[in-house]
Length: 271
View (tube, rainbow, N blue to C red):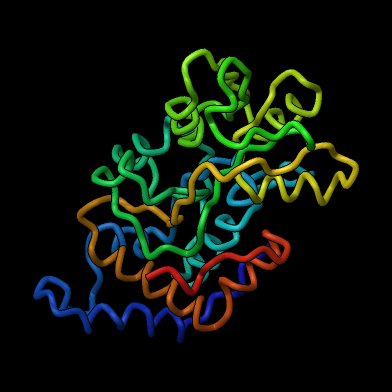
């Protein structure tokens, strides 16, 4: 999905909002820190995990796509800067932000204790629900029912850590490269369950109506946000203002319709 052409009036409105903050350091209209650098060089560097559909992925031509990729393109257009997308694996995302290799992170950063404290999270723009997928008629009622069985998880993802901690002793955890392989392992009886995002399972069932897979139970729900470096109040304020404008204008709802194919998102429930 292409970003809309830059709107100078919209950008001026968002930047002008910096003057409305009560903190003395933010009363000047001229932005500072990371936001000033991004505007000066005309480049926004965003780290994205491209094996995390529908938040971040590659389309059939190998081009970046996904909900947060589209959202980042709109953010870059609001800033009137070029967007450079940097592919990162889950374990490299936080270090890349902390070391300054990227200006921000996209593709499914959750409000979770494992990441809070290391970065600043923008206003949440949706929810991520993790579910256990299993074959129809063989669905476990909960983690205890998986004792002594095999569970496939996407390697490197927070979901893999959560699932590995939750399964009972004697459960074999299979770390596979992406959620689609996890679903395939269950369909081919190489695993008894697959921990994946509900959107991934829903897309699988839409693409393969004959699939034997079904949702067994919900593992956990997280709020999802774009991530920025700590100590960058101007940048965080701009991103939060951008998200509020997108929500008020229906932009977030439009992207959810495109990438979640009508699924409930709970946008209005986020603060």
